Image 1 (tube, one colour):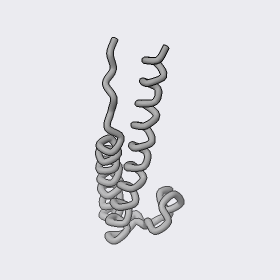
Image 2 (cartoon, rainbow, N blue to C red):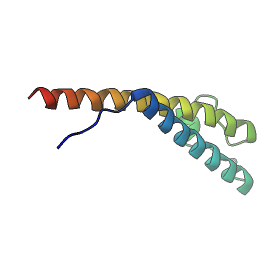
Image 3 (tube, rainbow, N blue to C red):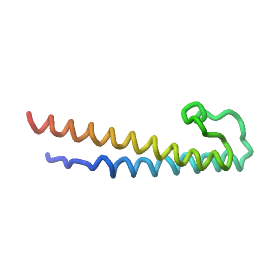
Image 4 (tube, one colour):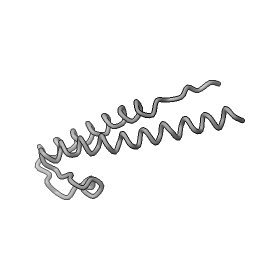
Amino acid sequence: MSYQRVNPVALGIGLGVIEGLAIFTATIVLFLQGDRGSAFLSKLFPFYSISLSGAFIGLVEGFIDGFIGGVILGFVYNAVLRLRKDN
């Protein structure tokens, strides 16, 4: 069975866009529902809050988080493929 390598930057961009949009959408939904309580994400992202400005901040911070995670995942995946190919 042959596996293809992944482009870590492309994977990072893809995961960053997905995570950023997910956080943005969830924040807008919570904001429109009137839920201004303490959000779990505010503990993970330093400038995040459930507000309109917080939605855009979450979009950017989510993209950065997803991008870094995707790049790391891509490098690890490619490294594992190289190790398996050498054996």
